[in-house]
Length: 207
Image (tube, rainbow, N blue to C red):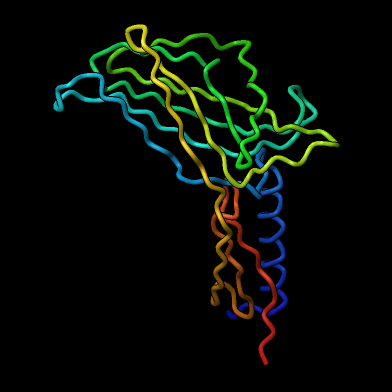
């Protein structure tokens, strides 16, 4: 039996409501996502080219929305994965991590109350999450979130090795598709930005 037009409209409205509810629950500000995702950095400790290096993957997870729960305010959430495929034990001190904005303003240091130096043995991995507070002052120029540079250092045999990764804010890409529902079209925004792909269904008026 054919679906009546008003039934199709109700279905589309319900779909919009469900998607809006899902996206509204995100902990991240949907205006900000960054690439590359992830950035890959490697260090070769040995002169032997056949020796596997230390591999580090870093990403900007997103800009966390302010919440009523402590810690309050907005944060840029960064993550680093240390994949120690080398033959040496390495150490990472989260206190060496720093984040800089596109206008080279430095973010306040992350809260490291529960994080001390981390040792990563050969063949082991460790993932570290860092929350950098976004400065919120009335008289300061708003910080430039269009580009971010994450810096950190690892230690090997007492020698520090300084690393950095640069991330660019992703630009919105808009696509239009017909045919999802008869009489409707979908505006599909991919990568602008957030943990979800955003679909918006609206009535298509044909002339």
